[in-house]
Length: 627
Image (spheres, helix red, strand yellow):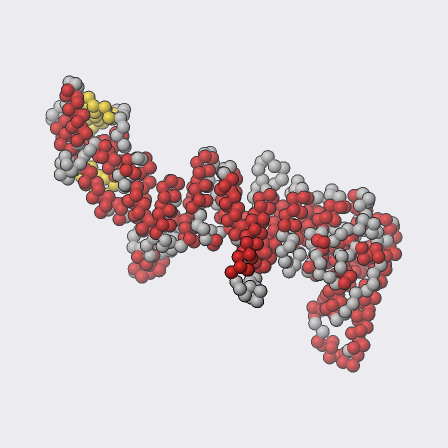
């Protein structure tokens, strides 16, 4: 830290209690100056030589035959006045970054100008500030921090503006030219670790990170911090990523519980203003801050009840790269007044903002690119796939909440239902988790939630789990079996779908008999469809016949070269066929036992009670949960 010593005489100021200061000298004091609650017993002669204001005040006291002067509004109070008084007595005074602003403002108040005496206090302090303080990185920050206590004096004397310029200029300098000491806790230099005592200038330059300045600025009050960041931005030499890192570091340091996601604070007004300011300072560029940081900032703005404008802007910013969020980021706790655990409505709003951004990006891309139809961009599809995967994982987590309404679950799932997914295993896992945690929902509600997934996009492992899952409606289990068998048939070279009975067809998605690609979410339930024991056996026979026919066709076409084909059969086809057979045989054995007891137990009609449904599924294989 830089410092400056003034005066050559020893310090002769004495203290008597907390409210009296006097000079120990041979000559008796001839005036009393009241500064706040402290009385200074001093001599007129040295003070008159330095301070124009004291000259005027003493002249007034002489006219009134008084030896008392009252000064109650001097910046810095008694401590700053004592520094100025000691300078008048030519006693030793040490100025540093912590007291120089107080001394400068007090000297200005006392009018200690060059016109009164050459080499006066104001001149000496200005030289110290210009030649030392403003050239030092850390001292400039300390001085800037202290200016807040001396407004508007420090502002009018341009101390604040000089500090801002000094700090912003040093933060904007090329890292290869950083040769001063700074605080950076993320990574110490080899010389600081003791591993390289001969660290030269080249290695120093290589190890100076681009965001070396962010931690030191965290010490500033939010008002001064805002002005520093604005000044740094105006120079245009710092990347938006570095600005974003600075804001993240400041939020972690100054907002209690921000890094842990549990916001706490006894001064909501203070933290509300801080969140608003940080949000306002966010760079416009998309990748300047992470989606995780923005979500935490939104969560904090909600906790401290920030304005709607701030919240809306944060939601819009999150929507720009919502696909980069993780499930953990989205698990935002609901307000204490809510019965649910997580705030699913906020996530719904964020996904809507993501979709609006995707839509506007596609429109802009179509308008700007003349070859859009020839060379389409796939960034949008990739983002949607990532977004759907994140929401599927999020739904699986919130589904564990026993108080989560079905409508909220379905509304969020339907919001991303149009996004292309290579697999529906994620949404199946979420559905299964919800059914497990909410066993009391009705049959119609089970059907409604199961429409969210497309059975044709389930993996072999998910299919195996689904056919043994007693929580799923029978309609869904049949669909899974049917499409798995079609997959096995297509894989083995089969080409047609067997004719099915009317009631069995009603259990399949619209268009599935024609191998349509329509989504399961478009299924229209037939409440009159009842799968009897006879029809269940018929379905078993039809699917078995399909396998036999396909096997026969393959045997006839390959009769002359059986050994050669056996060596070249694809392993995945064999595994798929075996998987389908296992699933079919397991389901048929369970369903036949159910049908023998009561054919009505297998009904999925809305008129059946929950107890009936439990009975119809009790004979399935043991309970399983895809987790």
